Image 1 (cartoon, rainbow, N blue to C red):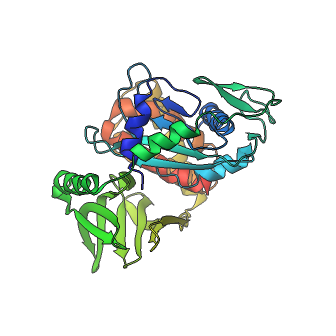
Image 2 (cartoon, rainbow, N blue to C red):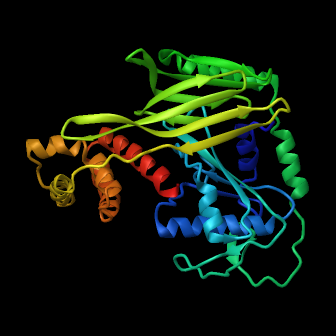
Length: 377
């Protein structure tokens, strides 16, 4: 089993990006330009590596390889995006890798691209790239090319050596467990060994509601691979497990006018097998709450007024300041109830909320995480 943190360190030892590895400070697949660039790099790396995995490391400064991290990204439907836009799509996996020196809410993103021995191309137009375009890696650059030559296998031995050197060990596993238990000691850290092989650690602030146990500020890591499987600073989560599975149900708090309920958002089940493999099954179980359209029109217009004041840096009234706390969540409810323009309003809100109040900005990021899950599903 590969220790993904060790793998990233070995990849970064190759100081320059090359035909099997790329690094990014961040990506943004919520916008058309960012989505197009990400698809281009996936396409190019897949085509340039027909016999071996290739990688994109996200959260690294390009100039000096300094690891700065990015937000936890838990979109299990990223393969849907790849399948929608690429012909002969490779298998793409996005994983969140914690590093000890990073803040709790930051990780390094690792994209692993597994080729399919066929030429990958864009299925349709996106941004400035045309459907049918084929990309390859030219050194550290993803370039469009006419495919008229045989692809040479030049990287499989190098990548195999890097992956072999990143194999996990008992020492790394034990160190990972101790590190997790010490770092999370304020949030009831626990661990369990599945199938005498997989070591899963989790922690969270406990909360009892009607004889049921929930957790917030949840962190779940598969120590063998140094992969963070789940992280949430705000939402409520229920956890259950058997000898073969570990199940997480995530709840989100939504409502209007100080009347809120918890709604099931997503169910994640990790299946551990006897042969040393595991799989993750993710099911969106969210039923969007429905509200009276007249009430939502009033809230939507009030939100727009607050947003315009934020843009112009005008002072908010006390009522508007109170409403600001739920601005992102109420825009989300509007969108889920058919107000399509609320999606653009949410995007517009981001920089102004970040400037106004960091705590509200963290709440905004949680709202966008919910939206991303719903959209891709």
